[in-house]
Structures are given as structure tokens and as C-alpha cells.
Image 1 (cartoon, rainbow, N blue to C red):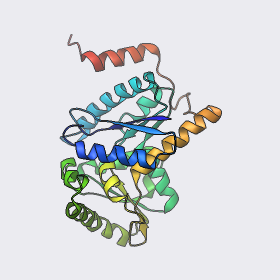
Image 2 (image 1 turned 30 degrees about the vertical axis):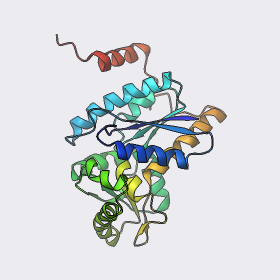
Image 3 (image 1 turned 180 degrees about the vertical axis):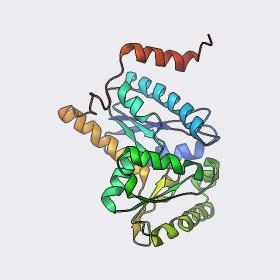
Length: 262
């Protein structure tokens, strides 16, 4: 099984993180599964809706190519899942949204879910995301660490002091959430998910901390197996009908050549 993992991080600027992520995913993958991590350049930066939209276009285009290259599944390795449904409509292989998979698992672990995101700018996006997945009423808290992807570099490069500092900062954000009634803590990003959620048995109070990187990978493996077993795929009627060839061609031309101004 070959899984294409689409990160929204630049492969050069965050090489230590992507190397750690690739090593971790392949270490926990089932026998016979390989995971190939790919970045985006420019990465998600200047956080906000426009950057998410731009990265979504790149990710969808790269996902279409991943199917053509023979991958068995695609993981959108960015918690906000921009372009998720568009990519699901464009390919016939399973497409897993890290945020979608993690929120649905978190809803099985506790009643009220708290999200710790990279930045407060994502708070409304996470609310909208949870509403889209039918879980808006289960989200009790959302707060940002207000840090940049580069702030994780030292921890992923092996600096234990930096790692401890990051985990301590995460706890300081999460503890008031648990005191306020949150049952499950979700690091809303693969960066904090890999660093913090990878700690065995990590809890904040009684609230388990969900490792979104592991959840997304294992969901991908499950969906590939179900697809092979009985052809299970998204609803191809009104929910997520397959894009016609003309739409596919127009989209890929746009991604390759940009707009023609008329």
C-alpha cells in the first residue's frame, strides 16, 4: 500500500520536521505500507483564508497527480482540510482529511472536544470545519499556541529542552480547557500533533491528547482496505459526485499555467 501524504510545509525550510514526520509515519505504518511525505512551496504562510485557499489548489492538483502515479490513498496532512471535498470529487482513491478523521475519533473518546491550534487566526475556520463535519456542538474550546512552524524546528532536530518547552506551552493552553469541561484535547495541526500527541499516554487532567498524525495514517490504511474489500467510497450522488473530464482539464490547466486575464 502506497500512501501520499500532502503536507502544507516547505520541504527545505522545515526539513527536520518533514524528515521526522516521514520516519514516524513509516515506523507506525502496517507491514507493507509505505508513506511518502510531500510539501508545498511556498508553504502555508501569512496565515489566513487566502493562504489556505492557495495551498488547497496546489494540494488538489498534486493529489490528482498522485492518483495518476499509482498511490492507493491521499492524506491531506493539514488539519484545516482545505480542498478536501474537491479532491475527493477529483479522484477515485480514498482521500483522508486529517481534521475530519481526528475530530470524528475524538468524538468517540469524550463528549466535549477542545482544539489547540497553531494560531488564533484559525479559530473561526475550526468552528466552520466542525460544523461541516456535524460536530460543531461538540467543540467546547478553541485556542491558538500563536507560534510559527519554524518554532518546532529545534524540537524536531532533537533538542529535548526545546521539546519540553513546547509541551509545557501546550499544557498551559490546554489546562484551562479541561478545567472548563473539555473531555478530549486535539492538537489541531500535524506539527503539534506529531510533537505532543506522540507522547505515550499523554493527558491533560483526565483528557486524552489525540495524535492526529497517527489517526490520519490509520484511517487511510483502513479506507484502502475497505475500498479493496467491497468498493466502499464517498457518496457519488449530490454529496461528492465525480468531477467531469472538462472540469478536471480546466482545473489542471489553471494549476499549471495560471489565469489568462481577458
